[in-house]
Length: 254
Ligand code: BV8
Ligand code: ZN
Image (cartoon, rainbow, N blue to C red; front, side):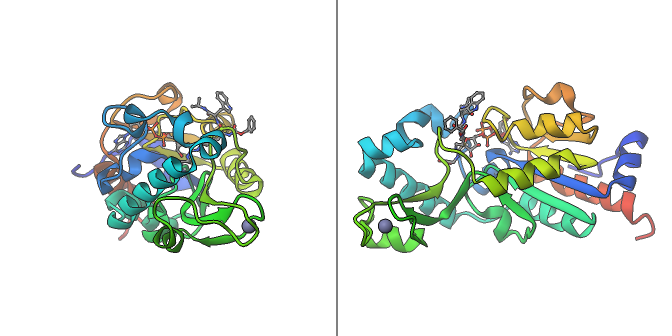
């Protein structure tokens, strides 16, 4: 995407913004070669979420669930942050209060250098025992036992460190994200269909708080109508241009 020209009202909001939230979903990692969930070619096209991403599925078919997460872990290990992740990390230096809130468990924001990062749905990088809660590295757990969940010394099973459907989100993380969304001046929603709750509720919180809302998504979403600006392009193209435009707003002389 060549130079992005922001309208004066948006430029004004970017110039005066102190508190910024970037809310991301699977679409931001699409250009890193990772499948999204919904939509054409999405993970959920080939298998149903309730079959694999729920505590019930893990109880019923622990091997199948474990192998599916091992497959996703290997995909993520082969992937790298793309220009969208890097632009999001770069903008952290532009605004005094800047929070990245992601639904992604792939860790690519962290690998791109984002520091103030809230992973609402956990991370594939670690596993924990479903009886005593002991944590361990997911890569080691898969290497030790690729076909079935390794057994803990307490007799429990290790499971991926992600939040499954029907499970509550980590309280402190959700509270931190809700506070950030409620008190932000600028809210970027990047690569999410906004269909999973309570994560998608953050967009409504920012809207009700009067923040300037910008959406980056090639497709419309249920929240597009609330947005001040919709960039209907892949994040890997739109975010570098948006970051540049925002830097020009904040640092006109450079
Ligand atoms: C819970 C980790 C409390 C695991 C995930 C209220 C209303 C309705 C339902 C509910 C509700 N409250 C709770 C529910 C139930 C449920 C839910 O939301 N169901 C949905 C399906 C309706 N929520 C829960 O169960 C949550 N827990 O509520 O607990 C509780 C507890 C006990 C009893 C009762 C309640 C837990 C939800 C978390 C589940 N875990 N992930 C794993 O990864 O395996 S969710 C997972 O799916 C992701 O983390 C993400 O959140 C979601 C996928 O959404 P997106 O990231 O947006 O991806 P998607 O594919 O949908 O869209 C991609 C978008 O990118 C598209 O718009 C596309 O156009 C765009 N795109 C494509 N390419 C690009 C692009 N954009 C930019 N650039 C590109 N190149
Ligand atoms: Zn244990």
